[in-house]
Image (tube, rainbow, N blue to C red; front, side, top):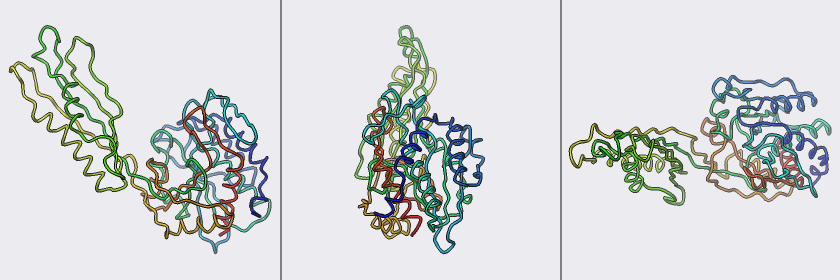
Length: 382
């Protein structure tokens, strides 16, 4: 409990509030990047390394890395948080009641991911204030996480000196995410032939009808305990009196097994292909043939860590030191950590205490942020 006593709870609270009340929607993280740079600069940090990812993401800034010299006998670590927040996030006003933080109810709060950033800043403050020995550290702040992990995808792993780290970005507390699925994004375009629906429907090929047949055949929903598929949007057609010429379907496939991910993606493609291949012109008047474009993009790779991995063992030791029971869990979503793990940087995801994220009911407690800071202090000193 000694580490908890070193933390200035009110200072941590004020840091968190200031961070949350700084606008930072995806691609407009410039103000947030400037504030973090100012706060860490006030603690003596050198100006950050900023990569060139903005040319790919369209953000106002690149990913930022702050480096802090530490005990060369200890394994270097990095901590990661993302700078951006989901909408509605403009003009946030934080409400504090009995050390529970919420917004006024018209916006999100921003604890995703500013609860993690606040804990990182307080950790560094305590290290300097108490002159504590610590491992060499890097703070990595990414952009555009909320719109597809774009900053992490554009990040070059060789720009980090540490070879393992922790992403502070999950709901609840006392939990570490050691596994998360890979995901393929699907964009399926079916092209038919337009025709007047009342005068010459025989001359057309209805793309909506073809899409319906394919969707009825394709696997969807929970496939097994580690695999899911979903079709999330369908757009097409021009008017009720025109045979629909084109339909675009967007979907995804997720699995903790790369083999199952590939297999299920192939099964879905086969279902759509069969519908197109088996189409026949009932009266021989259609002016063309149907076409299929099936586009697959890897959204993020699988994340698989084991309890015996150094990054997990180090966390378990630190958690025991500060008296925080730590549950190892497997999640269903993706994060920056998927990208880092996929590029050879073992990265565990630590929950920060935030709840009801991506909603106007979002909240976090000062107690959880204090305990998170204590956990980080134990991690960097081990």
